Amino acid sequence: MKRIVLLMSFCMLALFSSCNNDDNALGHKAEDAWLSFVQKDLIGEWSPQKVELKPIIGEPFMSIPYPNIPNCDVDVLTFRKDFTGGFTKHGEACASQQIPFYWKHRLGVIIFQLGEEKVITSLLLKKSPKYLVLDFKAADALPILKQYYPDIVKVPEDQLALLVVKMYFVKK
Image (cartoon, rainbow, N blue to C red; front, top):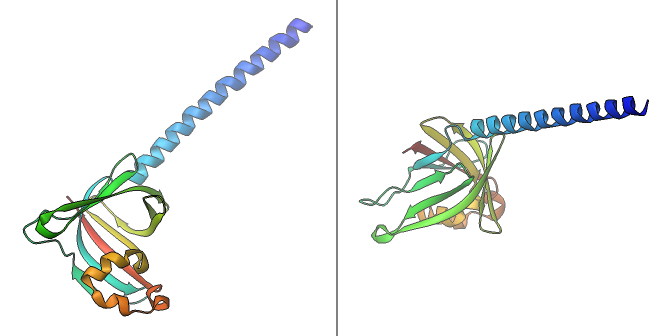
C-alpha cells in the first residue's frame, strides 16, 4: 500500500511539475507576443515634424513646423527594443545634445523616465509604420517651449496645467 501511495505521489509531482513548466513557457510566449505588439512600429528613429500647443479640449493656438536648425542634421527621437532611447537635439553650430531616457508603454500611454526624478507621461495618439503622434502636458515641456514660444512664461500656472503639446513625427 505504501508503494502505491508513493508511486501515486511521484506521478502527481511529475504531472504538476510538467504543467508548471508548460505554464511558464506559455507565459513567456504571451509576454514576448505582447512586447512585440507594443514595440511594433515604435522601435526606430523618428524625426519631429510639427508642434502644436493647445488646450486639453479645443483647437491649437500655436501650430508650427518643428524648428530644426537649418543646415544641421534633424533632431531625432529614438526608441530601442531594450526600452531605452534618446532624443538627439541640435543647437548652435550644429552641436548635438543627447537626452537619454527609459520608456514604458501602457495601453496608449508612453512614460519617459529621464534621469532619477524626471518623468514625462505622454498619450500615444497615433502609431503606424510611418507616423507617430504624442500628446503631453505643456508644463512638462516648459523648458523646450520657452525657446519657441517665449510668451508661454506669461501663462499663469493654473492655465498652463490645462495646456498640452502635440508632437508629430515621421519615421526616418
